[in-house]
Image (cartoon, rainbow, N blue to C red):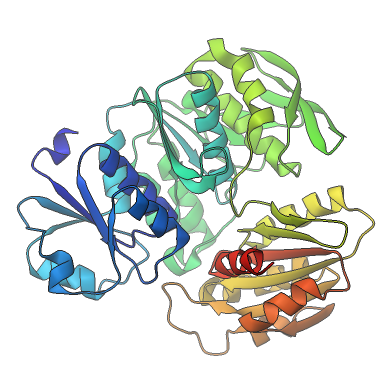
Amino acid sequence: MRAFDNIKNIFFIGIGGIGMSSIARYFNENGFCVSGYDRTKSDLICSLESEGIRFTDTLTPSALQHLSPETTLIVYTAAIQSDHPFLKYFETHQFKCLKRAKILGQLTAGKPTLAVAGTHGKTTTSALLAYMLYCADIKVTGFLGGILNNFESNYISTGSDVFVVEADEFDRSFLALSPTKACVIAMDPDHLDIYETAEAFQKTFRDFAKKLPTKAQLFISEDVDLEGQVISLSTAKADIYINNICIKEGSFYFDYVSDLVSLTNIKSNLPGKYNILNSAMALSLAIAYQPQHAQIYADALASFEGIQRRFNKVIDSEELVLIDDYAHHPKEIAAVLEAVNDLYPSEKKSVIFQSHLYSRTRDFADDFASVLSEFDEVNLLEIYPAREEPIAGINAAFLCDKITVQKRIINKNEISSVVYQNKNRIVLMLGAGDIGVEVQKLIKEK
């Protein structure tokens, strides 16, 4: 870590973020004095504190007095505004301040790095990949975008022979990486508050693809359009293909065939056909890195326990099935609904949805309304603004008017009654805002 030779302290602005906290854990494990700020003290931050990482939610001299510009690096999330008081304080006092993406690029530079890109599926695929390598006793460090149930952490570390990272398209962050192998699962336009046009969004993925040593190190799904000699993966004819998909006793089984290996009767406990693609992408990258462990990678799928906020059945009883998922894009909601319909084809479903960002709600309003109207009942929370200021006329009522099934707008103190008094047994809570916190409150209430 030559780039950090003179650094003793690392301070994170937005340390409670899922991507920020995994890097904080890395630095803490490697002997740096790690601290950070966030707006609220979440369960994740409590976990960081238990590991020895210091936390503050206020800008006070006492919270920052141990930091000096000469020996401190400030890491900040791309989601914060440039006028954020913490960032302004550190810039004014001549601290070195770098975005998270830049730090991740520096940490992985010159090392074998397997990167997972795509509008959807990044977290599950990268977590599966890191877990497969872990099961093969490979010395791996994984910076992951979700809490793995197998480890109760978003960070895997058994060594640094290879790194596994999510290649995040937000703010063009993945262009700071130098991957040796990568995959692109989906290129559906998103983050148009950053990119403005779908064409600009897709161009950035093409720019990411150019960062690979050769296109032969890039795996893509059948829906991804990237030029050059890439390796395609599909359920139809492709360089790598998946077939014999079936469901037995609630688990998926499938075969995986490539030029290198043929793996049969692979078991996955993850719901939904979309997770078969995610699993096959993870297999492809793992096999490309060290093919001799192919069967171990495949067998690891059966013991993978999933990720928090990715199709988690937080309640599963005869009276109620409550599913929590991070889905915040229309195609992600559609994929979750397809998985639910596979498991419960004859039952009616209710959804509580919290849209994430005014701009995303505006840009994809018709698509959101279309997929939400496939549920039997829709309950909308107000839009979670995250980094954005309100946009005139864009709110929950704007989206609600477009939905064609039974619908209403609710506030957070009504969630419990919607869940526990619902006439439908299957209830989903979807969104990337703070709706996940509300799920945890429900669990603690029960």
